[in-house]
Image 1 (tube, rainbow, N blue to C red):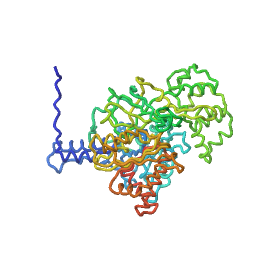
Image 2 (cartoon, one colour):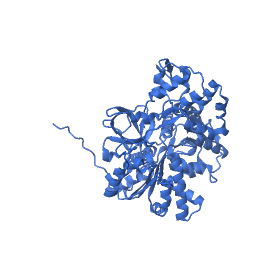
Image 3 (cartoon, rainbow, N blue to C red):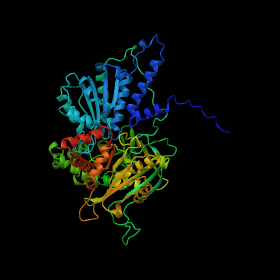
Image 4 (cartoon, rainbow, N blue to C red):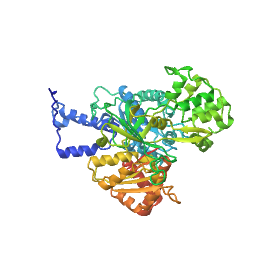
Length: 620
């Protein structure tokens, strides 16, 4: 006996109009899709309303678009990993619930010409790496910082920054934006917020202050205001699983793909290579989780037991001591293993520890003039290293209160669901090294490396709308991904093959050694033979006297690279921050040489590619 299937209403659009609609919404993020859906709903409501004549039909743009700027709150966000987007969406939802007219825009969709007429603007923006804006915010940040920015004597504003205090330039972008808006004559409503990885600690009180100010400045919509009903374009797909409530994914495969010498006497044996890279496959079956190539998988990990014991030993604390903090009561050992950050330092913790240890030299590093030295400390020391180098007394309660919450780690997904089904694949570099006389390791990478088949890994999907294959399958793509930066491009090539994309795929890959670091070598070779991959350029930096990197290969192929870009190709870069900067410099040199542009024009050329969504970066 079979269940009766529901009868679906036919799509009331001709095929050509469906194609136009798909093209119009391709690449839009969640906020933009909500706006479009509200706009369409308003149009439908206007057409269905009983009116005496067409002249009497009300205009039906979205509420925010039809509201005078003096009565509207504009919220603009710039987000790389999704945290700033979520914070902005929460602010917008609370403002709407308070009856305010709100428009929420990603930074690259904000019409810069409207800045001069804004009256109330809230900006939520993250800082990436060593003081860089998110990719979606480059154009807006440069506009506000540049000579073309208008004077803003009538603008009232507030800025919330998100960052990571393990970087010396903590929330640098938001601080510079806040200062620049004031310099342009705008009125700061509340001090700029600077949220660390425990975002809500700062974001929640900042949001409350911002909403109070907005309610005082704006009037709630009257009963006669025409509001479009906002209907989601993809109903029923609200995420059940999130970074706060991850899905327990079953580990299907944990395979080492590095460290083998394929030519020498140690054939088939794990060698002494300094890399331990794993290919990991996880089952999403039954989760309802969906991802697109370019998205990341968030992993909720536990800190290594050896690291936890090292911290307890350095502070001479008993791991069984019970600590109550934030409504939770746990043994200290469990706080350190599952709830607190141990591998990443923060400026506030260092300041408190310097006071505990009465360490003048450590305290001196926190001065603004010492940012470079402090950055070096962040890059070389884990928490336990600081505790050993500058001994101090801490109580269990003080320690738990001072340490940051354990943040999940994001890994680029290395697969396409169209090929692997209800699975997500990862390429994980397992960090391991010796420093200060002790073995060190990565917290999340070590956690994943230690999982066995059948184990559960808490995961969620982190969307990255600006790192997607082109909606137009006829577009060519250039992918630059050395090391584990190649992960998303494995998914890109799979996706393009499964969807029948006709555009060409060109991959630049690099590693230290061919034998130890050519990840997914057989897959790339098969893809070349089958036509799924059209060009492959390799750079193995340590296999010859002169070091060769992917940026060198780019310059060697500069004429072709520039021609591809001129003909509409999309460009993608994934990997370490330093590599991303080197590649960007190489691309700029290519544009100067082969495009006949000066340095300023070449910079503008690449910025335009980024703001147009044709140059995506996923750097970390």
